[in-house]
Image 1 (cartoon, helix red, strand yellow):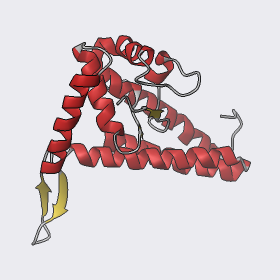
Image 2 (tube, one colour):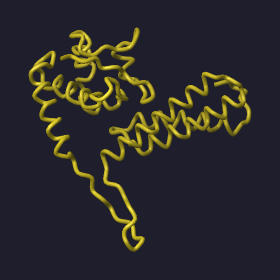
Image 3 (cartoon, rainbow, N blue to C red):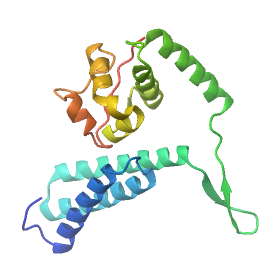
Image 4 (cartoon, rainbow, N blue to C red):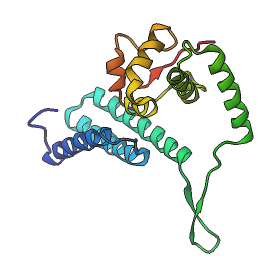
Length: 196
């Protein structure tokens, strides 16, 4: 960010956003509702920055931030209860089912497949394979952050990712290293290639 970026309010917002993202990364578990809000703020700030500078790359960054915000909102909705308006205008909490019947059947299929085809028999590798498969099953890609991986795998994260990459089960884009993948942000998805 240019030190003399104008207007000053935009520069201040970008600095505050950087601090907010760093603080979020320090949390033990991601807060997807907060992350969606931060990504929306980032998209708005980058659009304003693009207006000031005419830089089309900033517009693309803003679009990526909007996509990341949408993904975070969907993740939050999938993991939490949600509130609707009741019949008398009162707010009521609707608890989302953990899995539908069809999803449970798919989960059993994936678990069987993980058991049969994971590149190592280590439980941590199985957990990573399961979580990455579930996250990316529809399109082959998905937003998985280093923070989420560390949350799933605790202190074994780097070792497990090294094993998945070495077995060619997980391919990191370009010259990205495991260490860089662990620092990944939600707007930069990592492709998971099929292993069946």
